[in-house]
Length: 98
Image (cartoon, rainbow, N blue to C red; front, side):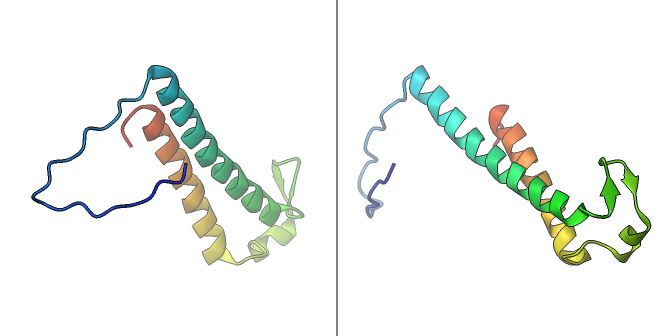
């Protein structure tokens, strides 16, 4: 998917764009969605790794959890924000709002 960039001057009319076939549009949608969801899953895995040792079976919070996540609250909250961003963007993209 590497495409060379070129300079477009104001006095030149834009070149006609190739319209994607429905099959190509679906493949593009699948590719972008797969990338976004991969990032979301990776972020979730990082967040879960931070909680390991402080929760059991994903439900019971152990006393040592009071110390906060291993990476510190700032990085932990940034990862949560990233996860929300990936999921919101993916939802919007699939719904054709992104």
